[in-house]
Image 1 (tube, rainbow over the protein chains, first blue to last red):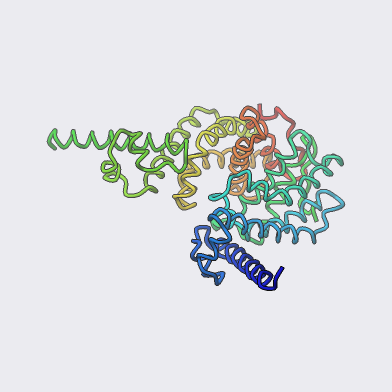
Image 2 (cartoon, rainbow over the protein chains, first blue to last red):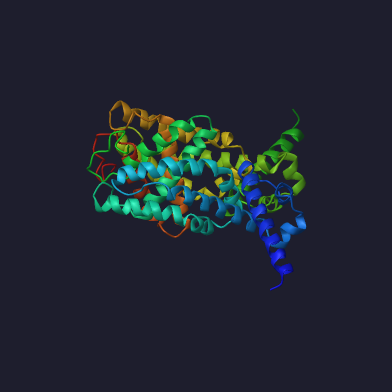
Length: 202
Length: 202
């Protein structure tokens, strides 16, 4: 392979990376950001953008994948072993900030991508929660009368609901993780068992 | 007032009513239904539609208001007095079907209307839930360590999350109300108190 094609390929990779980064930033501020705006922010022309991405949906998909990859890296640094109550509280503490930061980008994804694709992109974070829940069920601190997939969805719904409450000015970002943790630990408690007291997840 | 203007006004009311009904039906099938499609379904011309509605947002707002009015009528028929656990389970049983039926229309509203307006339109159903929760708090069966507004939002988030699970083919419509009730009654239980056994809300 000649050095010319190597250089061209390196150029293309740089352009793609710049476009995906610009898309994550622009869509993260405004879910309706246009492709021209994204190309401008990336410092490339529209022709270059269209050379690498066939549609707006492809750009949104790449930006969302990037955000999720970053999220997975952040979650890699969290100790999710040990007491499932503590592990879940730690997951919420970090995961909540990721959801909060990515909410405009997620709004763009919900307009452009099928629900199944959004679910697929979230399979990394979802697998971590599933692991914590399965351990909590084995230790009889989490309920087994509802499917794991349902419990994962409840956690993510409550996280997104906190983002809505903040947007409505009815919740501060600083209190969100506590509200989510108190709600979800109760929702996951087996029928007949007492709901954990606050601080059980600390 | 002459009989001519009375007749004209009656015509206008009939057109508006036909447009709002057609909008609720068309948007309820497809949140991206066009105004031309809605005019056609209402049996009026586009000019007539634009004579009564200044924008797509106004049409969506009127359709959503209509769906909520119908929902409020359905909820009027439900006995929400007595044991707060039973009252909440009854609210979920009826409210869940309303959410499920209106999910495409709500998707249209989320694209066209500000979040504050959607919240305002839901103030009737929200007030009923607030009433049940306040009674449950007074009777010490629901938690008081989280704000009422947060608990209302949790209930509605879990309902919408059930709609997502059904769309993903992971939950049947018939089991949704049970899942929602079991989850929300646990989420609302005061820390230190046992989560109600299944059937507590029957």
